[in-house]
Length: 452
Image (tube, rainbow, N blue to C red; front, side, top):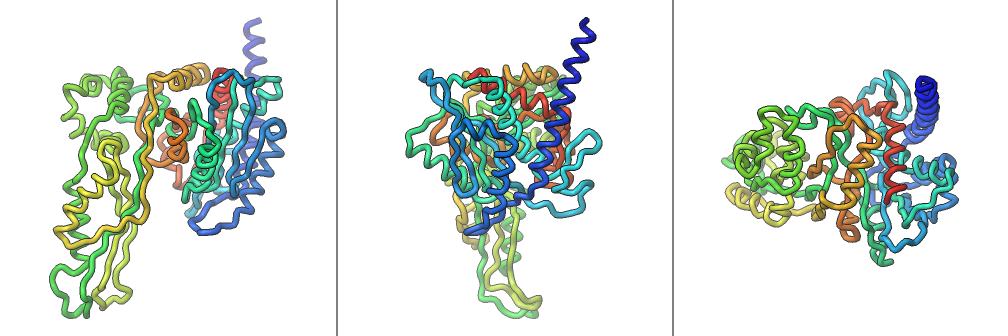
């Protein structure tokens, strides 16, 4: 009898998986690359909306829908039990997909137990899973106890203007959220070197992203008679010093401390250090970047030099040369203090600093809150192999940074199991998702929607 029940459950899961693969593949096949343009053509994003409406008819029948220039907001009215609403977010734009892929970036191919294509992880998959969960609950006759909102922007990979516009509109309407569930960390085996377990990594906040230009000037001249300390030489010396003598303050924040506390039981002898940051904090700050560059980046502001320009002639000394740096500033140092630390070094080399784009200070969610405990329960109910849900600080950016103005607890997590190759494929080559993770991902969102 038990064998027959297990077989029936297995058949149901297999039917769901097959249908889910077909639906998600349709979204992957629709190219939705966003670009940095002042007035981009949003036709393809609205065509993508049409696919969503066809795929999730009950959701679009029940929910109020607004279009914000290719970004969408849905409102599913609840039973009005007096609680603040909850937001579920993802985005439907993707980055470009250059290079030679094992399977075409917009093919939606299924091979080796995986679905391939741009957006399978970042994050058409998350958008699909949360709407699929809502569709199934509506078909079951479920009505949420409070209002539930769904948001999906078409500018997350570029300007973020879609999410910012929606968050501003909600703020003007005096809408506040009890909790926001956005993309971010995922389920990984050994996310930090030495952590022998499977963990759901939940972003509690994110570092601010500030774009800076570093400019060196001179009178120029002919390359046959170069003087000393020409613009490129000064820029090179400046970059080398920043790279070798990091000017930013390193600090173990409460969230990172909690991250180590939860992971330490799985780290063997190293767990003695990670589990007692109050004693071994100095040692940990020194060795962590070597163990895990990602974890090391959580401790301080970072600066990556990404673009450069100088003379347009091979035999001409530049009058102006510049490099662009992508600075991700920490919560404890902030944008102004991080720039001030760079100015001290820049002054030595007669380099100007221009702020191209200011960052946004992200709030930090509470890992002792009802929302985080609910997320933990949802993970355990749908991914029983996970050892622990672990809070951390995201080093990348997400659209939920714009919702900090109307919600204190924005949780950044996608319910998908991934490996190192898949992690590296995000914004890289051969992005793909395990087909076995699709059914539990939908069940994760269903659990949250039932329980909020």
